[in-house]
Image (cartoon, rainbow, N blue to C red; front, side, top):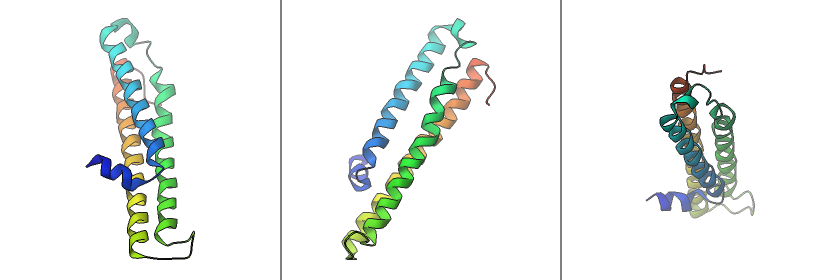
Length: 123
């Protein structure tokens, strides 16, 4: 099912996939460091430098995918509007937006949680 969403989302799903994988790696490393090294809890603010990337860039990539999808759906590239191109383009627009926002929301929530766990204020 997710593979179908990925295919429908088009070319911009690849950078979103990379962002998802990198975000998972960062979160795994941060939570592991905090859980296994209690001393690092109070000094572990590196997530403040990394997570803003994932809070800002994926929605922009999703928006770019949305614009590409709208262009496809209205046949602005070749002047031909068909039901198939409209459905394909709107599907790409919806899925890239959804995935971009999902990554950003996840990163934002995790940033708050990590800040709370490490005792850092959320700036």
